[in-house]
Image (cartoon, rainbow, N blue to C red; front, side, top):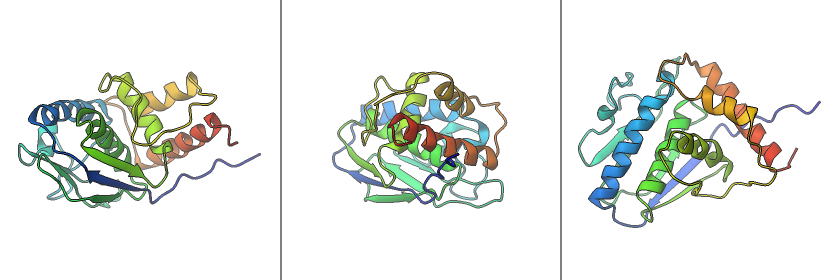
Length: 202
């Protein structure tokens, strides 16, 4: 029996701002990422950049009307580096989530930037297109984006739509859903293994 491959633990996301964000694009992004915040289980939501406490309101991610900032924290009180985007031209970013639960919110936030601030960002993942497969399906399910365009393409050969996809999407949805760091480890592992199956690599 072939063991399930462990996903990359140190995925790096590179974000380069290539154009100015209009106020209407920023407003659209703000609404989408706010909605995403409430749709996620509490332990997949971001934390305060100041002290790592769980954010009680989505508005707390916007430390200024033109700035969006967050960090992640696991059950062992490990706090990831803060991530910040601004309406003005931001410096190039390298985001490393180190396999922590904040990884999923980070990918969703990047998807929201890519879709709602169209043409303003070049976004890549060191893991390739597989990084965007689950976030894009999750965002479409929750009507946060309209299509499956992603920063990097992922294979749709032998695309599975059914119980496996449904289980993954449901497991990372719902504000009241109990969620632990161990749950995230399992979901992350299954996410990458499922994408390998879809691409016919297994």
